[in-house]
Amino acid sequence: AILIALILCATATILALNAVSGAFLVAAVFLIYRALISPLVPLAESILLANLTAYRLDFGQVRAWGSASVVATTLLCGYLIDWFDARVILYLLLAILLAKIVTSNHLPARARTAQPAITTAAILRALRDRGFLLLLGSAAISQACHGVFYAFSTFRWLEAGHSTSVIGMFWSLGVGVEIVAFVFGKHLTARLSAGRIILIACIAGVLRWGLFGLSADLGPTLVVQILQGATLGFTQVGVASYIRQNIAPEFLSSATGVYFASAGLISALAILVSAQLYPLSSSYVFLFTAFLCVLGAVVATFINGRSG
Image (cartoon, rainbow, N blue to C red; front, side, top):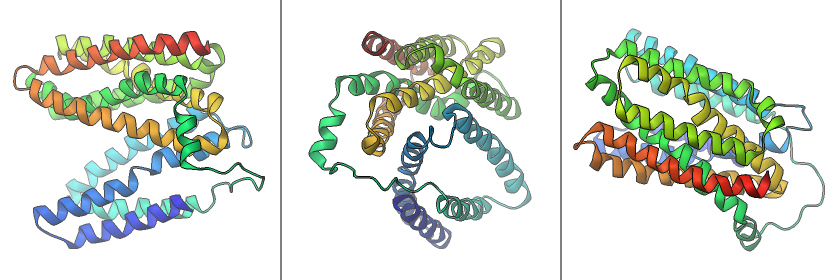
């Protein structure tokens, strides 16, 4: 019900965004829209995690379809803008949100069993768990580094002399490898603990961002994008595995929400720092994110020792 209410409100803001003009009003309505859709992913993911066993689902394979939809939608947006104009994206968003209302109505209902009272104190007590804090200090940092990558990578590639069409191929390669990582996520979680998976993701982040900081040429870039399977795919598979094994079902929404909020906050702060580093050298931006992943890897070793 909360998911559907948020989608309905987001739909209304898209209609408003289509009607307003002027920088201030557009920015204000867009920020409201972002506030409404930001909880959708963690909320939907908590519903998925709560029902994996009952519906015999594999988190990685479900998530792979999400990544595939990113590729398809991005390609569709490119063609639509060429055929029409940028405003067509608002209509596409409306269509997607209406489709989400329909599909959300068919999500599994909460089991009709007695549940403990969910109070703020109970949630805070659950989220003060040492292992969960370690998760925020490792996986959330690894995830947040992708925000810096999304903000500055295209500029770095343009600096290196790559065309926009080639840069589009770089993005497609990264998402393609990410999909492969999700598809094989079940085999990964069967062999490794969540802590080890997150540790591998953080080490891959050190390699990926460090290499990209040193060179944005074609050869290094191909390696950088192939590593997205580990830095993004393994991180999300590891987080899902940890939360499913260590968080009580009644706290899944709160735990996933706090994780995504933490990753978003760290990403915002990292982008602010990177904006100061970029005028000095675009290399410094990604060497900075490599350093963040070093910190994440150190923290992840404690998850590894605790859960593995």
